[in-house]
Length: 260
Image (cartoon, rainbow, N blue to C red; front, side, top):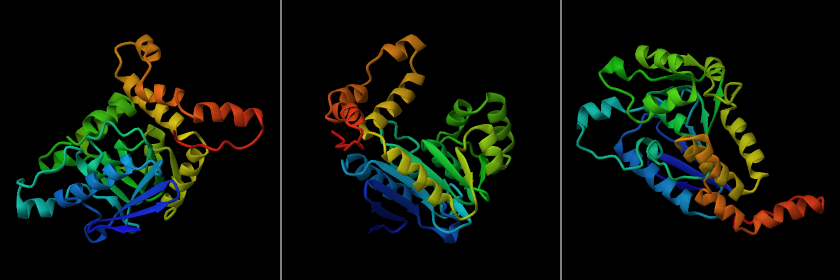
C-alpha cells in the first residue's frame, strides 16, 4: 500500500487500485491531486508487473464531483495541471494498459470525464453522471465534449452536453457508456470481477487490442486501420506470449503469461 495525500494506491498482484481520497468534498479534484494522479499513472504505465488499473472514489456518495470549484475560487487559475490532464488521465493518450472506472455515486463534470477516459465503466445503482459545466459558466474541456459523442449517438450526447442533465447508471448503460450496473456498494467488486477476466488473457494481446482500437478509430479509412501494424501489435507478435498461448491451448493447460 502506497499512501498519497489525496489518493490511496493499492497493488493486488497484477492489479493497481487507485482511490480518490477526498470524500469530504465528494472526491472533487484540484491541481495538487492532478499532480499526484500524474505520478501514479506514470508509475503504473512503467511497471511491468502491473497490468490493469481500477479507479474509484472513497465513500459511497461520489466517484468524483469533478473540479474543486471552492478551491479554484479561493486560489484562482494560477496552479498548473499536468499535461496528462484531469486526474492524470483525460489527456493521457499513450497508456495501452486497461483502466476500469468503478463508479459509486456522483461522477460529475471532470469526474465523468475521468470515467469516460477509462476503458470500462462499472457503475453502482446510485451512480449519477453529468457534464454540468455550462451551468457554472464553464465547458467540459477535459475530454467530455469529444469522448461522449464518440461513445453514444451524437444527438443523445448533445442532449446531455447542452442541458447538463443528470443521467442514472441504468440510463448510462442504455445509452452505451456504462458496461455494467451493480448493486450499491459493489462497484469496486464488480470492477475487480471484470479485471479478473481480463487477467486471464495475455497482457500483450490486451494492450495490442486497446491500441489498435483507439488508433484505428482515428485512421482515415477502415482499410488503413486494418492493414496498419500498430506498435503494440508488433510487440505482441514478437513476444514469448505469442508462442505460449497456442502452445498452452494445444496442451490443454492454462497459459503462463509473461507479459514479454
